[in-house]
Structures are given as C-alpha cells and as structure tokens.
Length: 320
Image (cartoon, rainbow, N blue to C red; front, side):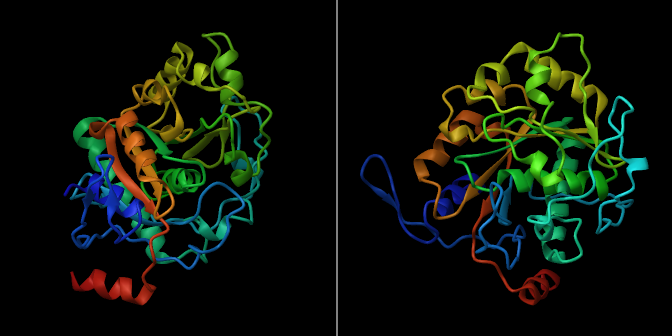
C-alpha cells in the first residue's frame, strides 16, 4: 500500500474498514511505522482559524537530509519595525503573530520541540525535491475547509525561511476564506485579489515579515475566486514570484470541493495535501488526489491523529 493510499485509509476512520463505491471493503493492514509524527497537546483544542496542529505527515520522499548549514529557528518574531518593510520600501505593519495561534507556530518557545523537528523534516523533503527536481512553487491544499492547511502552510514557510534561510513568499490564495492576514496581524485591504485585477505589468505589492519571509495577503474576499485563480494573470503572478523568491508557498482553497481545481494545480510544481483524520470523507479526499494528481503530490499531512507523548516520541526516534 502506497503512502497516499495509507493516508486515504487513515483519513477515512483510522483502523476502521473503508467502504468502496462497489460495495466491497478494504480491510487495512496495520499502518507502517512513520517518522512523520507530530506530538502535540493542541490536537483537541478548537482553533479560531482554519485548521489545527498537524499530527502526522506521509511524505513521498523516503529520504531527505538537512543541509549542514541549517540555522537555529528563532523562537520569537522580531517586533522592530525597522526590519519589516514592504517590498516596495514602505514600512510594513506586522508586529507579531496572533496570540490565538502563537503556541502552534514553530517560532514560539512553547511549541513542542518535536513539532518543530517534524516540520524541519518536511522542509528537508521539499529541499531534496528542489535539488533533484527544481521544485519551487508549492500549493498547500486540503479536501475540505478546516482540515488544517493554513497553519501547515504557515509553519512550512516559517521553517523554510528561518531554518533554511531561504527567501520565501507565502501567498494567501484562499480568496473566499482568507486567514493568513489574521495569523500575521496585518491589514487585508490589498493583496492577491487586487493583483489579479491589476495590469499585467504591475509588480506585486507584498509585505516583508522578516529578512527571509514575505507575505502576499489575499486582499478583499472574493465570492467567486476560481475564475481569477485559474486565469493567465494568476499564472503570470506565479511566474513573477518564482523568479523573485527561492520558494513560493500558496495556501489555496480546498480542492476536494472545486470543479476546476486542477487548473490551479497545473500552475505549481508540487502539492501538499492536508487531511483531517476521521473527519474528511474518503470520497472527498479521493477527489482531491484526483484533482491535484498523484504525481504532483509531494506529501500528505494527516491531522488529528492521536499524538504520542513527547518523551515517547524522542525515545522511539533515537532508538531507530
């Protein structure tokens, strides 16, 4: 059983039997031991923003090695406005992350070290993909809303920018339900939606969060965003971003419920699919895999799996 199939099985109800459309059933074999486990005490806590702390990742790449020059992740964002500027030179208004999600971000002292380590492993997988396959533009999506894609995209962008010191652009492409501006506590008056309506030669106006992380908020919500997100203008925005940044991470709408989500998937190099275990219907997840395409999926982040105790995690990790 492949890792994507295993994630599909676990999304459908853990150790329970999955029902197939033909009326039969797949009796699952015991899940293989996976290094992609995110211990956390936040799994049962209601989240004010979309998603919860991820608890498991099934990655396409079995091997990924951190570069020798990985930097220590700073545990607090800078609040010095002198270092926080818009890409066009104007001062940004970012002053820190929302307290509502700070304890679920990898830059916070109270975050589980195991959680931070697992995001570094996920980032290492992507780093390996970039070296071997020139992967650069990643969409983070889900089968349904509230599966946890936004916090996954945020933590991945923070890890790539801080641990790997890569220049990262994080784009809020969920134009119907934007939330990255709430996490970063910045205005949402101008962003991707406005860029999609702008002239083709107009440069992106982005917010510099740190020396290595830049944010493009969604802008004002759009009730019918897919025509814009799948347009040639969107493709040119992605091309411009790819030329300017080492990594481009897009927090996209859930593709499991989109009729033309494949058009957006065609614009990126790879995708991370975020699934909430025992909640997201099997058919929705299967549709999301079909829309994105198995070959394009770099990994599956499985949220809501019963977490290991942190000392158990480290005991198992160092015995392997």
